[in-house]
Image (tube, rainbow, N blue to C red; front, side, top):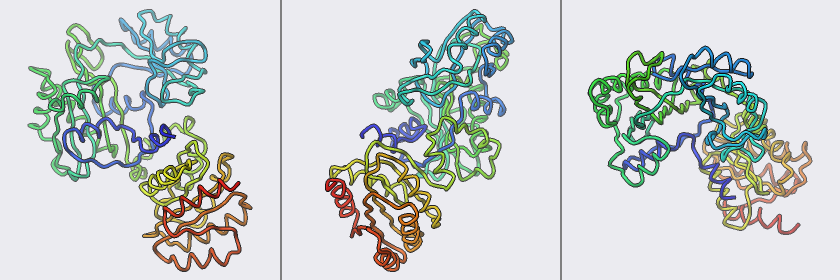
Length: 438
């Protein structure tokens, strides 16, 4: 239960938000659903002039081998592409250990790709059965002499974007924030003015870059901000923004000792999908939960949990509160389902279809606070769903807000076995009790 609820509260790209918090700046916690594979994010950065490693993408072992030969690099890194962290320590059901491998022999790339492609990779962030790898990224391996951290994200308290950086990047950036908050630097960006030269140079200096590298870092910071704006991102997080040792040269590194964005997460504003159709078309839904994907068709936000009381609410905050109060009264939420604001009867019906299709569900709790939502529409959708789906599990409904009296009349005159509740606490108790009576 705890792990599942953590998934509900977890926000992609939470590291940058945590760093903002440690620097005593409050931040917004929006839900973002578009996920890009690593190679897709790197291609976006490449398109905006951001320095990345040379790389190719392969769907077969022979393509991977050809890519390794084309790179003509001293060392090659082969990375399985799935939407999960911890790939380096993951395990394939082919027996191969690790979703990230380094080699100086191009022929080994084909052998490794054969043990990756078509097999499931299991990490700490995947389901127990793992996720099937369909694509690998073949990239030039570069040494890193020093790792830094840099991110740009939207921050409500500042009414716009904020840069966050640290001269100590890498895997333990959260530890740095917890133990050495003085090493976390922040620059508030004027959304109309953009990143000023002095801000970019100051952040570059705070990241520890000196001499010519300071100017390079400032240039990369401005290009990352340009990317941030042009793709309607809510966050661009680079960890590490690394410095290569002298002597290494790549296509984006015409001289020695240069900066490279080795890894990045880009979060997007879902409301900008109409402007970013090409980017949203990249969304790989094959790794998503089928129920979440089906819910998204009807503009429903759904996350499955491991309990038996289905939660049907409007608003993410209300959903989390409902899950918490069910848990407080000894029950276990079966899901997190957010109906949102622009509600239609068909959405209510489809939501009930999703909830009743889950064999774990033994009761349903509807908790609606009607501000912009008309409670009567909810009530009509509930009665229609109950009749057409021949609901077999107990249903507890708590409605409050706009047109609530009409909604209560619809429910009471429906002749359906619906249990009404006065408030959220009452609703949670009745939902838990309905299962205990079975």
